[in-house]
Image 1 (cartoon, helix red, strand yellow):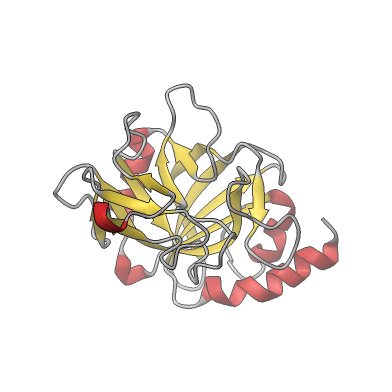
Image 2 (image 1 turned 120 degrees about the vertical axis):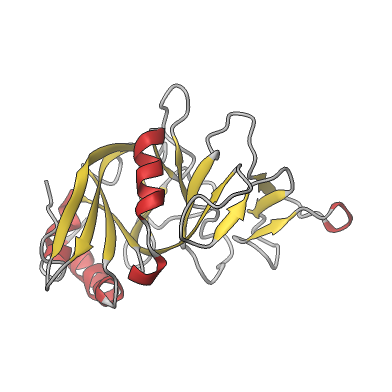
Length: 227
């Protein structure tokens, strides 16, 4: 990626990161093609961010990262890429009827779905399955492999732009720790620590980028590390 593209992306997204957020989750990958990365949690004190806990290894999409906007490769539906950019963290979900966090909570019973049909008016939203009006394509949120036993909803493609990707989460690693279809996955203990830490009052956000773009964000987000 050229320096111009990185700078343009920085100029578009950085004001979104800095606006009122006191909790920041940073996921760094070695490059856009990497299928793994490192996650660090930060809280904002007096003017700068401070790392919370330890760095956590995570798995990314099987084809690396795709940008939310501003540069290629762009994230698209079914491309096997995790989104790169800045995103609100809006809710959590889990298989227990009791909420697992202070965030808004989705109970993942056997009727909770996430719609990934690019032609559906409810594309990239959660809903309860209605057998009389069933979407053509959707993802069941109570899975046989239990990787959605607990998870976090990342507010990627908020406007539901057709074909730009859907149903992006933090979730549990697969048993063989393989890359994901586009989410960000980790082991259960750090996932639960993340979930319990999230505070809606602090407007948590995710910054997920390759290391090559990190220094541009570091100028605004004082305290985050790029290695």
